[in-house]
Amino acid sequence: MPTPTPTPTGPLVLVTGGTGFLALWVITQLLRQGYRVRTTVRSLSKSAHITSCLHEAGIPSEQIATLEIVPADLLADAGWPAAVAGATYIQHVASPFPAHAPSDENELITPAREGTLRVLRAARDARAVKRVVLTSSFAAVGYGHAFEYEGADSERGFTEEDWTDLQGPREVLAYPKSKTVAERAAWEFMDDTTKESSAADKQKQKQKQPFDLVTVCPVSILGPALGKEDGTSFRTLLELLTGNAPGIPKLHWGIVDVRDCAKMHLLAMTTPAAAGERFLCIGEGALWMEDIAKVLRRDLGEKARKVPTRVLPNVLVRLVALVWPVVKSVLPELGHEKKISNAKARNILGWEWEYSSEQAVVAGAESLFKFGILQG
Ligand SMILES: NC(=O)c1ccc[n+]([C@@H]2O[C@H](COP(=O)([O-])OP(=O)(O)OC[C@H]3O[C@@H](n4cnc5c(N)ncnc54)[C@H](OP(=O)(O)O)[C@@H]3O)[C@@H](O)[C@H]2O)c1
Image 1 (cartoon, protein in one colour):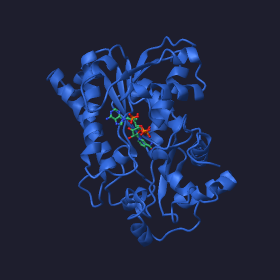
Image 2: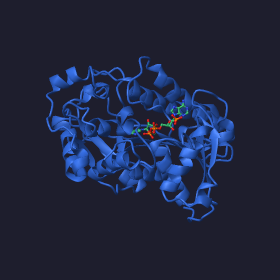
Image 3: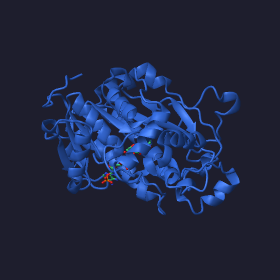
């Protein structure tokens, strides 16, 4: 691992979507570890936001000045070859993550899938890339199932062997569908490359690949924002803290702190044994929404005065979803306790979470006040 220096000299890492909540923390940790970083944005007008967030993270100005910011859109070919040129690693984090499902699911599926393939093709053609880390999601793992891991199977929990079942008994909405389709397309691309390379045995072909792929599948990411951030990760906290929520739905929320999630991305990038693997990314565990509300009231005091206390029966939540769109996307999950394992990440990557679920919730909520999204 490169040593931290004011002027990074380590390998060049491309991080896609540098404006994003998670990507900003991935960039921060890469710079802290001495990597050179290039990031893509849809619009260069957002460059100032990125640099101000890196200042907030405590990155020295001379190091921030080394960050390259280049334009590239997941929906267009332009910019990707230049973005990838000279990179040793790619962290492909960008993907649309809206708070509300669009009327046309392809608004999410097309950029998620086609954007991933654009990045992988550019990586293959550049030939200097050693590894691509793709930010997938638990949304590509644990949706559409009949919740067979409850009851007798509850000790097993969801693992990396599981895939969201797009033909399963429960509806899969646009966002989980986009993440599932994009991750599947990425693994299929790697298989195709393997087939193209030669007709010899699979292991030999695998070794001939120009780069390898690792996917990270986080549950809900919370924790501190580095700037004014009211994106999807913060929607539920906003609904609770503004008192918009008429009550608390029975939802079990898998949580990882953004700092721990970024740490896993860096380990996934450099751990040799991670090649060709996917990793679930969950910290201490999941919390019921009722407990999240309690933590907010306990730690934020007066700022949390509007957080509701009443737990809503499921039948009522289904009615509420008609006027509270953020709930609609989780209706299939109502009342289900999901067990999710982080054993593989701990065993292969040596990853450990540092921030508890409660700390991630409170840090996320504090960010909303710190950057003026909410007034105290
Ligand atoms: N946050 C979570 O709870 C969570 C959980 C699991 C997985 N994930 C995954 O983690 C990744 C980052 O999520 P996040 O929470 O950081 O979301 P975010 O803050 O909304 O960031 C999304 C990023 O994707 C970029 N993007 C969207 N559409 C694009 C397009 N057509 N072309 C280029 N860039 C585009 C956005 O750029 P603009 O600034 O231009 O919009 C932004 O930089 C995503 O892949 C998401 O699916 C997130």
